[in-house]
Image (tube, rainbow, N blue to C red):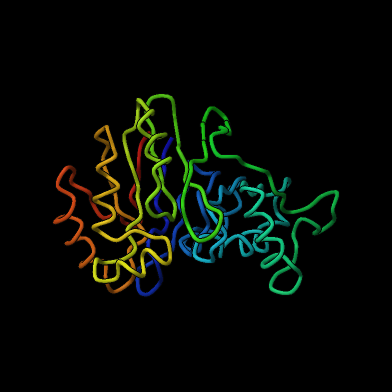
Amino acid sequence: MKLKILGCSGGIGGELRTTSMLLDEDILIDAGTGVGDLSLDDIAKIDHVFVTHSHLDHVTSIPFIVDSVGARRDKPLIIHSTQATQEILRQHLFNWKLWSDFCEIPSKDKPHMQHEDIFVGTTVEIDGRRITPLSANHVVPSVGFHLDSGESSLVFTGDTTTNNPFWVEINKIKNLRYLIIETAFCNREKELAIKSKHLCASMLAESLNKLECNPEIFISHLNPGEADIIMEEVQECVTKFSPSRLMNNHVFDL
């Protein structure tokens, strides 16, 4: 298994892309603006999108994927998300007003897209690759993901704030090699982080104190214009580990 980072920023501008990760050639973990850097042929190979939550920076490319390559595919693109997230996408995105409902195009019998339910703690296995939704704590229904090749694992928190059940679960993962965790705000914006259910550097440090193993840690979802400040504060606050800034095109081998 290889996971390539297509986007990992909290916004856009220059080389910044919002959250999206390509697992091998056929699975996306979220579908932010980073998907747009793939070729049309590469986009056509994507069969599955696992969605952490419904916010636009994580789903914005789904309509364009289906619109761009749906007609050249012989099977629907499968969107894996919780029932709560599906309802939000149906009501507010694929609603025939903001975008067409590709679960009905070209017909309900042969659609370009279909939804599949996922549940926290229930593993989805695709050709030997195990993807398990994890608890997240955000302003909309959200999950993180545990990716397990059998040999090693990667955990992606998705957008989240302080969340004790999450740490209980990942401390059970014996082969955890990588942890990607968000830190959207600098410490002077802690109140905004709390209100929007993200993390700032000091909150990250408090959360990581609950981690009982020693994976490589990467920081994602840094707000544009504040990334350097946030990472400086992370290095100051997090004394138990040495987190690195997640970058586009980083490839994780699992």
